[in-house]
Length: 106
Image 1 (cartoon, rainbow, N blue to C red):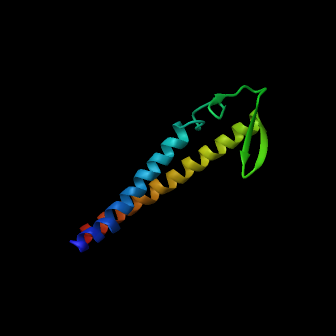
Image 2: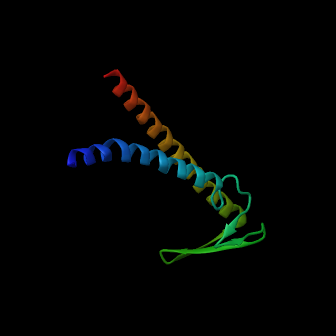
Image 3: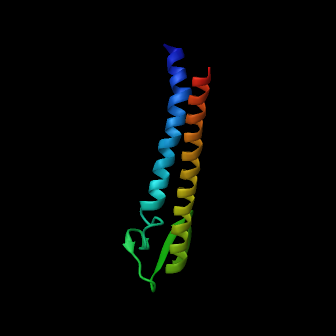
């Protein structure tokens, strides 16, 4: 039974999990809060206008962002999520295809 569980974890959970995580990251990057397809800019749940600023505190350092800076920061994170998710999705699907080809060739 342990051999079956080890095989399932090695070949099924890891590869399919990579595909699922990649798809979720792409979806969040595109459609999530402040995603690439979302034109609104929000700070702490409040929709900002171009005249407003956003103040955040991280590690006891307070920083104030303008509307354009905060929008740029949000879109950068969306691009990172979308790109990383797409890479994980491609790698996962490639591994699935290669393993199936190897199984049928044997």
